[in-house]
Image (cartoon, rainbow, N blue to C red; front, side, top):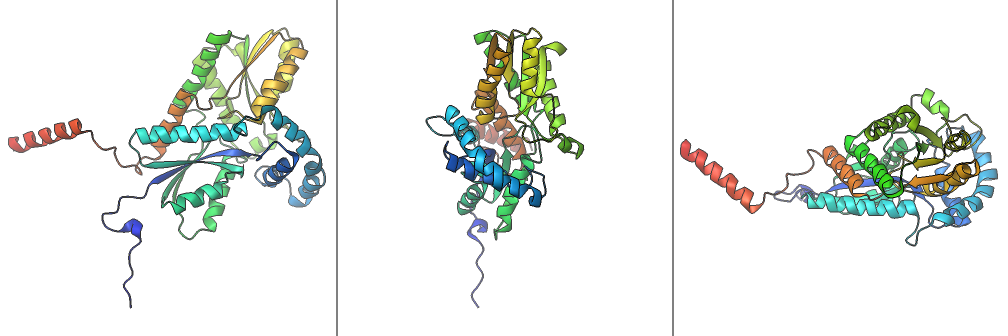
Length: 365
């Protein structure tokens, strides 16, 4: 009988397989067209983490109404924010992954970073398969959601484990749940606001708009609402804002269920009608600009505030590939990779100094 040979990854003297970092965001259609939106929405709205309605009740609504009427409307909105390189969310996530790769490599870490989308392309399954083909045996899953939610963070976990169920050799996995109160992340958000104020002046109120969720998710134990509140409070404290100088609001309501509030659009209208002339709006629940920030907040939000009597409206972009934000993300990744990454090689001068110390200790003995 032939001897069983060890896997190449475990042969004596073989360097350890590289570590992978999967930077996962929500998703995007492939193009701003009704056909592409129909495919994207069918995948997105079929996720039971996103729509927690029994399938028998939801399927006729999704396939009989929503996928017949919504794709054309959504395609027009996407077209209004589409970048020359593609969808804003995909473009920024790809740039973030490249920047994170550069920072970890510069720190001496043998890490491969791949961007992925929970819905659409590049898919999480494709990214995980690429890691496996490259011999990556340890993967840090880094969802690009500062606040944890079952509809977002947990859905990324579902997609990774679904790929794992079809895979013979599953890599070691670590999973970042949230970074909503990470000091470096809060500092990067505060710096972006201060930089905007230095360029364009300061509004009377800073509105922090985060993505909405049905209110029932809070009662079912989802921590998203509480984590959003903490992010907003920490950011307001970092900026030295008083209680009347900031608001946290929830956007992107959908359907007839009661959603978390107060609603962003209603708050903007109420502020304008109450005499607030200038507002600044930030979206600290989004790591990268996308349809919900660029169209819903930067465009629709401005129109609603000005129409209600406001005079000046400023949208402060997401961190995107901002240097401070990327440094915070790299630090977060390094902390979660602890124990997986070998210590960076010492510089020649450091090795020489270490050798001199060792010789001195030997002579002393």
